[in-house]
Image (tube, rainbow, N blue to C red; front, side, top):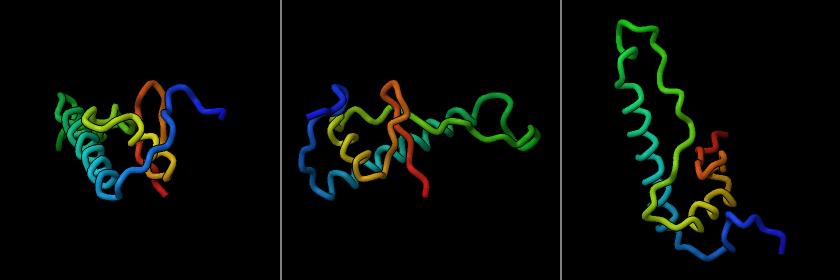
Length: 89
């Protein structure tokens, strides 16, 4: 098989486990963006630009195989260097 060494072979995960992983990813992304926006230069009197963060390192309580499965399902996109971003349709 011709797979990338970074992506482990496909395993079967429960729908609930994938849902929890996706929820954890979204929460981490929201917190990361909020942290970025709270720095000096953002606010009601600034130019109004929000966070430019689109990709993050996924929560480490889930294995790489879970994230690879979410990429395979088209819910996440690998952005390089161990980061992922949410696929928008």
